[in-house]
Length: 247
Image 1 (cartoon, rainbow, N blue to C red):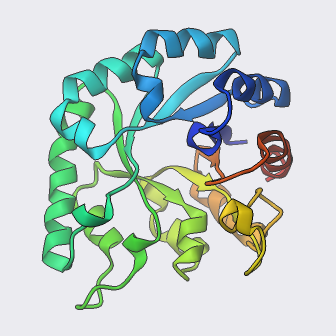
Image 2 (image 1 turned 135 degrees about the vertical axis):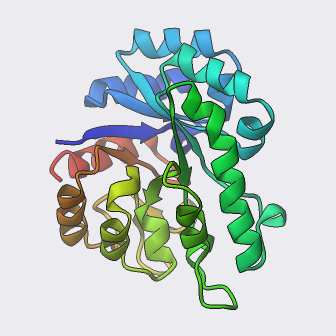
Image 3 (image 1 turned 120 degrees about the vertical axis):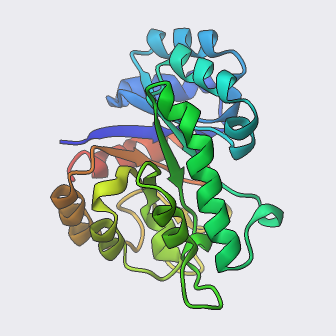
């Protein structure tokens, strides 16, 4: 069974200790971090240890990885992060055409070098915009992947779905590059508006059976539970884990 993790960005609006306690109680052993957890990495490590948790993967901003590689590496090694993942590009910073996306892929390959030299993995996490066709018909995700075999991918399956692509096809296409996947769900159209249209895993419209079969065939090692805007973290954690633990 692949490792099951939880992206802490999901519960950013809730008390940290309450979140970690719920994860420990539920049986989840891993978390995926993001920005605020890197302000005091030693304190983060101590807090995780106290709850029997580890953080093998972490989301690090493009700006931090590019401009502060030494600090990125220090934070990762202090906490125990093994894979540094760039999670997002702000709208104003996104490339606009194929040549710009190609250059962005090359940029990612370049900034991965010190991370990989330190013995860590380097990855990129998608949203939906990387799957929107450019004027020449190419996709941004292809330019990222083609830039370097050293850029691993954390495939967010629900964002692929939202972009109206088949997650199974992309799992198969990127099988040898997948460091992990994000598993989250989408509510039926017009529902869960107070949660921005997201759903707990297994309680939305995504058909998971073929996706899980493809993940197993690809040997994906880690499933990261996520929800972008939950209004009840206990419900999110317990229901999503109940689903994913049966994958």
